[in-house]
Length: 398
Image 1 (spheres, rainbow, N blue to C red):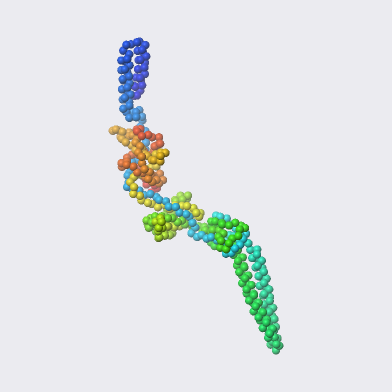
Image 2 (image 1 turned 90 degrees about the horizontal axis):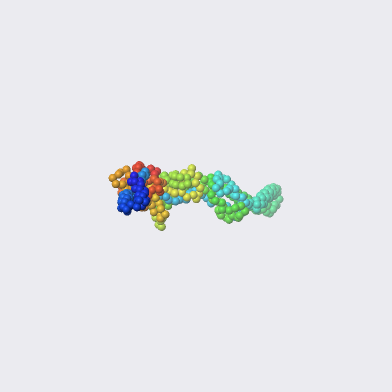
């Protein structure tokens, strides 16, 4: 109302000046000065009202009252790599040319499934040669035994055949030795041919294939990596004091692309790393996660930190280009409890989990802090606060 009156009076001044000028009224200056003085008095009266608040409707804002704490519990994450409980690098026992690889990386196989094969062309020829040799020696043995039987029959009739009989018996003994050696060699070649095909020793997944068809593999050189298909585990390094609080079989929260889940403590290494003062623990992972080897997941453990501060919703924080954070807190506006003014306070961002932020500031217990629309507010403007009930535990998921 006062602002409109001043504008109206200013128009009157200009009209009066024009009229007085026209009438050449001698007291024009006195009249103008009187009106101008009145105008400035209106202007001074208006300027004495902070930021012209008389004409600004207080803006409704949602606020929460801070609750100061001496410490807080953070969730600390420790990275670990997923590995199979059972893993084996498979290869051949002897040098050979790889003629077929029957699996691909990532393929699941069952125990006994053929994985790869070596060239057995020359090996097959040697086996056939030895089979023929064994057969030939068997015939020679049969013939020698027949000759020995004939000579013994002649000897029983009184004929002198001792020298020939001894020679045949020596020949029979030599043929038996040759036969045994040939059969042993044949068995060795047949075993080698069998081992020229690589079989899966357990149900699993082909994690890696190191060679390609046509390449030569060395003796005991890995051809592929087979890992157990179902059971996975992950190993983490954690602080010594936290490791002492864990036990075998304990369920612990884990985090990954799958979201949140739980692993079971399988092993706790009692010795501590001298360099990092950390302790290694291994978790068995749920089979339903179906995690691949090498995937990074995180073990989530609580850690109490003794820092004074208070929790706020993330929406209360205002960031700037300098990397600092601030909030809008309320100060009372005179004796009117229904209207307050905003004051900007710089705070220190300590920790954030989900939509709750733990901060440090010198604000007093119970101070009201704006939690909505902070980007469109400014320090000093009048607001009408609406107190909301907010618990940090709800935002933290406790």
